[in-house]
Length: 431
Ligand code: DLL
Image 1 (cartoon, protein in one colour):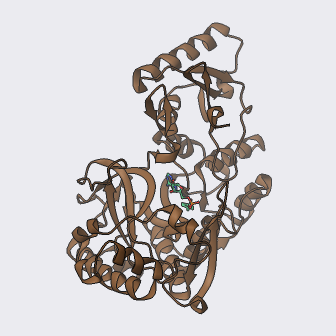
Image 2 (spheres, helix red, strand yellow):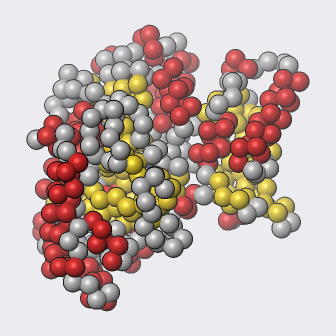
Image 3 (cartoon, protein in one colour):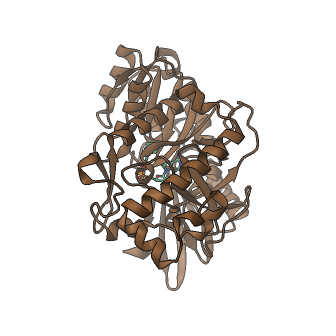
């Protein structure tokens, strides 16, 4: 079953998508009061939606819809059929609750198993799941996926970093699943304990996601921690992890299109963009039973590509996520994503991937301060070298992103480390 879904042809994918979409629209209309009203208000009938191209007629669903219908107003099944609920931690107001039927849990496990298989994981592997377990979907999502494929799972969750390293060593972990920022921290902590992960551990694959990360961070992780680092994408409203994953070609993340229909829109106008154009990803969940979503605005910025991939899979790919529309910083009118700054910083020798962006205002003008840690190797008394590096980084940021920023170099290990999603932006303008 698992293998066959990965090897669907383009034609089979499109046919399955359209079949499932028609069924979903009918079911949503019949069983979800929320969608029935949406359809009636926009004068759409389920029969009007026959294939992906008709989707543009359907209004978007947004996070506020989930909040407004808190906790379970978006269900498309009887409450009695729900077996699990996760929730995302909103900073204010109600969290976003997502609900799963038994069939949803199984389908989600299979998607994560497919992701792991795509990274070359097999039932012989020891998979340490160091995403948080609990309301966050990362831990349980990958846990069920690894178990589904028969691998040996270590449900380590996050935190207790020393113990994580001991587990890796003693239990022979071959696959680590965690956020890329935690992976950097794990690598650094191992080294402090005299363990060189590349020599003393057996990590052949890292399954890193839940936050944006750069190609240079991949390079650092592959040089210091795992043999091969893969990017995994997901979001609670779309089940959790397991929506998309990189294959060995590492040229974009394959979206499991038998479960998700992806559109890219212009975030300002809502207009659907062509493949190859950058915009906001909008997803329709065509295989979710409990709480399906039609045209859900993810706020994530990427590019869709359905060209054939070297790996042979026909599932379309999205580019590494650039950032979220709501994480985009506007500095003196210029839009910039933290990931773009990360890309510039981490391409410099002597600089680590640990950084923090502080934005505030001086009079009417925005000011950006980039704090970035220098590496141990760089630690020297050569003040001129430090001033020189600082200046080169400032010039490069200006050149690459057209924004003026001050760079402050921090001593090694001075910036905060994260066990889950890193908090890299401090926007004092919002306080
Ligand atoms: O982060 C689910 C997940 C867990 C994905 C483990 C991958 C691994 P949420 O907490 O709902 O769910 O956050 C979803 O995180 O809209 C993106 O902005 C961001 N995100 C997730 N994966 C990636 C990634 C989980 N690979 C939000 N690259 C999404 C960049 C990512 N951003």
